[in-house]
Image (cartoon, rainbow, N blue to C red):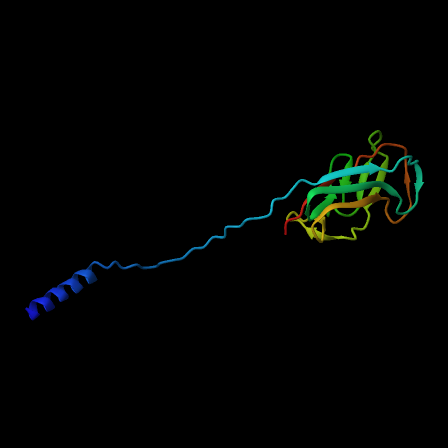
Length: 169
């Protein structure tokens, strides 16, 4: 009887060992599942200075106020809009913009943003830049100015374009 029990035990071990599968070249893959905070649209309002007169404009003359707002705190970003036939921003889209008059293409206005005291320059993937607030805010204001030297501006209407959005680092 002892021999039979031993034989049965060996048979069970042999059977279970022969039914084990072999796994070769096993790899492990991972993926990140990310939840981000929702973003909200940024509203941008450009308010031109009233009663501007043509002729010589002093250095750093305010041309317009710009207000950005958001219903929730977030990092607001802004820059000049894309180039058009009458609007030519600098290649970085945060420097100088040259604007042709709506009535006469020979009339030109050169404009810059006021220094962004609470914002940093953030590069975009296409080689352009954005001014983005350093911290989440619900509002931000700045100005559109003449450059750091006096310019002559002919009578005309000059249309500026500004892009704004949310910077999500």
